[in-house]
Length: 292
Figure 1 (cartoon, rainbow, N blue to C red):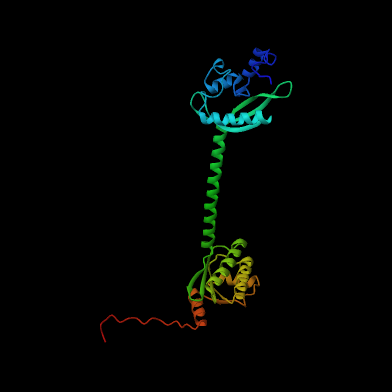
Figure 2 (cartoon, helix red, strand yellow):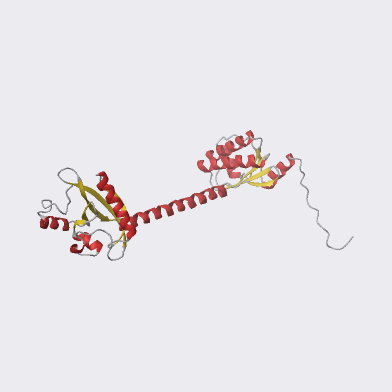
């Protein structure tokens, strides 16, 4: 087998070849099968921190940390033994003692008989790219965390927007505040049904005092909620309906005949408790005058 270092024909135009190699911005080296440098370009000399004359004919030992040499040679051997190219991301400590992340590609070199006599390696410094990638991954992780927080906040706001409160055994209160659009109407129905199921409620008092406008969409949403609650054995009591809302519903010809309505929350609660066989009585004022 012919050695690269001993083949005079391979390097008969060494000066021209060296100029070509030195014109390449990336560090480049050529090794024989024993890991000895046969040729290096100026970029590689700068990376190692030694002139070309001190590198040619020597191997990596003494120029790189031992643990890095072990990685280099493992991939060198892979190329010369298999005859296949290899690429690897490596941490390299250069002559300036600064650690860099490198992308190294190694290619087999063959003689006229097709035998692998060495390898050529090209190194690209990807430290900045790696740093940007790590920063991008960190930013992506932070964005995912932020999205998780936003989603949790959205869920909390949805719950706050549709609060269902247990005010008595078997009695729930749904105080609605703000406009009822299609999305919120669906949330109302979902929250009410879940609360009815959890509390085994028999009555849900829907207080619309805080709803500024009850139009056809809002009325139909209320009807759907009432009908769904009835399927779970829960009666709905609509309270807080103002004169303007009542006139609007009459004008819209919305059938509210199947819904129990009361003028205020107090009257709605009184109705529900009465149906549950509770009786509300006024508390007797305690006499503090000392008279008998």
